[in-house]
Amino acid sequence: MNTKPTAIDAYITRAAAIHLKLTRLQQLADDHFGHDPEAIHWGHVGDLGRVNQALDDLLAIFDGQSK
Figure 1 (tube, one colour):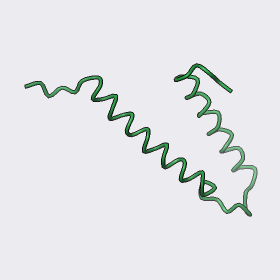
Figure 2 (cartoon, helix red, strand yellow; figure 1 turned 180 degrees about the vertical axis):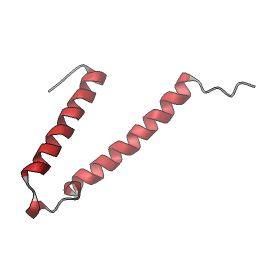
Figure 3 (cartoon, one colour; figure 1 turned 120 degrees about the horizontal axis):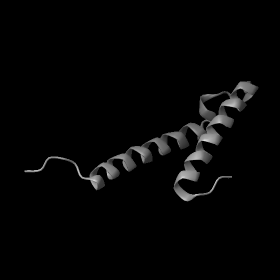
């Protein structure tokens, strides 16, 4: 009996993990990433800039477009 996972099994597992993380990221975004909107400072802006760049990098990997 072959218990070694196939590439498609590993792919499905990793894709599911990514979907969970995307859902959590959306929840955090909907809640201002846990920050009080009245207390936002430039450090928060910088954090979101880095996140935005990382998301652009990921999109470039998968659909060949960088914005």
